[in-house]
Image (cartoon, rainbow, N blue to C red):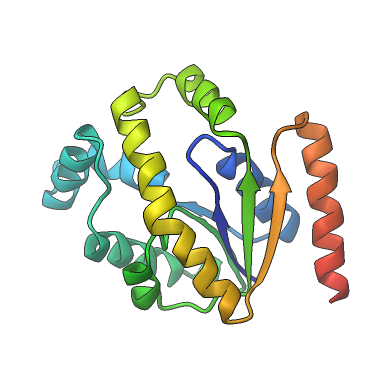
Length: 181
């Protein structure tokens, strides 16, 4: 099953994505993790990624989707994957070379997401950068969700406000329902 995971930054997409991937025995692929690894490289792509992230911008669509499609072509993703961080706009949707079976929406109040972001202490989590990423999500990523919904992709929403064990139980219930469908 090919799954996309969406939510504002700090909503807990990675936690829920990793858990889902583990339950379904498929890889969890996060563009943020890939980009953080690349920015440490001295390659030209690594330098581009570092420059964009350090400025609080997103990595351009072309390089992002080249990286994503290359990763999704790996053998471990043949039976499915959970993808976090792409496609994040309609242009990237056009570049994605894999079909999508399910989208998981991680819901969390923006103020709670902010608290979580500041508590993790990443260099790129400045107030200005976070505000840019929140605005991008509203303007660019929400239309992606609508796009997939309009094309019949199943969309499920999970509230990530409760305690982690409650969220996991709720997610387990949603995944069981999916298996019945």
